[in-house]
Image 1 (cartoon, one colour):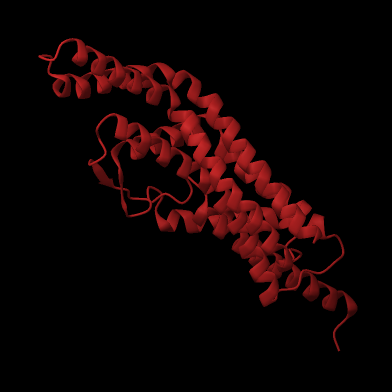
Image 2: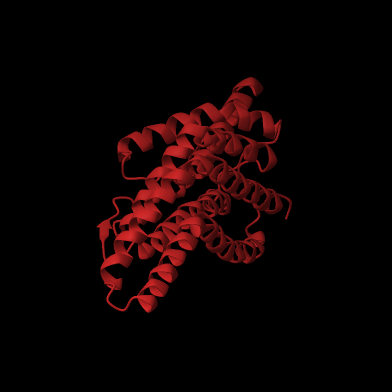
Length: 267
């Protein structure tokens, strides 16, 4: 028979390996769904190495949060980690949907509604201005360091909800909380596109009134160029307000994700 020290060492290594596997699942799902990390601009091998390295670095934090309790690897625990990563990913993906919708609204006002591009991230046809808004949003995220804030939030989630402790019974409540957030992303997109939307509508009304006063005026030929020039000028002028707007929206989504995960850990 082996010594007690050997048995304790084997149990400790088994617990560490289980913790590593569970953390790897949580991190992988988050990277697969979260904006910027899920983009096709990052090669698959790079993301895989990043997930492995991050999970390995987080294992000591898992051991500290679990204390003397062993980490058990089970199918239920794996599903719980997938749920935690999916909560983070799906919540933060609403940020991209907000940018895409705002770009689509602006594109319609610029008469670019028929101009679509193949989005390399989702591999579907997306509006031209939607792609532009998503690219600018990604630049804001990187410049503000919000990608590092996401990772820091993931570390905090390991303390609030240790690996294998998320209760799947909390998922219906999580789903009920996520659905109303879709309307919130819609209104946020309207807020982002509101200056350009208001300006282009005023241009349309002005040109229409001028057309009433002067029937010989080529209204159709003037409306589209004036709308596009006015909208682009106002869009460029409002870019200074983008960082604060996006930081607040992204931080609020991250707070919601943390609360949902914490509720599942207590549930």
